[in-house]
Image (cartoon, rainbow, N blue to C red; front, side):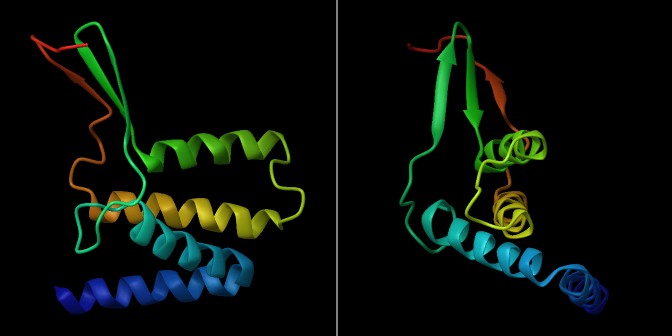
Length: 119
């Protein structure tokens, strides 16, 4: 089972590298940047805080995968980084998304309901 997982990761990496070297480099850079600066649940301390806000009995957690996805959607229609190739920009944001989903067990929890949530 572990060998299948390794072969899958290698084949995905080779495929992305074949499609675009800038996208591949961006994915690597985004992944390790997110791991160093954003991740707090792994061996490194969190360097950038989480974005959470409360509204009535609900708490919203804007994970960095969600913020990166929003930036990708906006960048499809508007050039956000005119000084950077689009493939590199999308690769960096994609690396951030992959890092958060791969390492964070609560990546899917965006909205949580609390009965006695203090504001």
